[in-house]
Length: 361
Image (cartoon, rainbow, N blue to C red; front, side, top):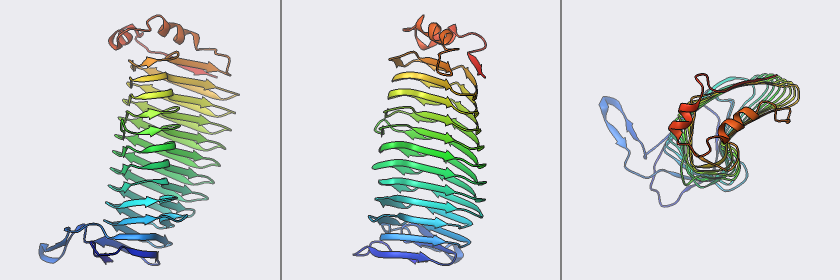
């Protein structure tokens, strides 16, 4: 379906899609037969309302501006095998894009969009036996949000999220991105090349992960820049029940002002958490670079190698506690306290050949 932009009035009302459709507009160049092109010389068509797409094989939308000031989503997509959204602008009082899947194998590509404020910019819900792979790439998040991204999966579902090269510059009450899973579900998240700009304001966390039941989790956080202000942790992982979680946090820049920990790892119940924290730069002002709490009968395995501690810390740079009694933390605390004002190069030089490694059972 082709829509013309630069009309005198925006399009209004709800759009219900009942068959496979591609929404294209005059904002983007369209190439026809023999290489002939048209469009690409107008603003985006404006829709004031919502778009609802359910139970179709394919849906795509490119080059639109969608504003929904009522409860619900600007764009709701459910049980759609292939979904793409690119070069759009979304503004919503509730949710920008909501993707839901309970039963099918689904692929979503959300690329080069601009989100100008919403309670949640992108929401991913996967339940029962649903399988969703979501590629979220080169989007801009500005304005005010509860969460930039929220993902939740349960039952025996599978959720794979590739969050790459996005720019977060707005204000966030809860998080840049929050993920929860339970039941026997599987969550696999890759967060690479993203920037939380100096102008970004986080009232709570950067990226937050909570697992329960017997859920399994795999996380890679690599090559990101956290430059704004945070009210709590920049990466927080909290495992409960009998869930398992493997996290690699590598080659990130944790900067700005952090009223908490850059990395916060908490294991509860009989869960198992394995974390590799390597080659990161901890700079700016923060309470701690790393906080670890192993609680209950959980297992926590930590490798902390080749990181640079260059920040101004208001507390111990590194803290590791088992069952809340501080066991295992004194060596790291004493090591850092002995050289509180050392330059980053000195900190690295004084690290042992095999940097701190902890196994808490």
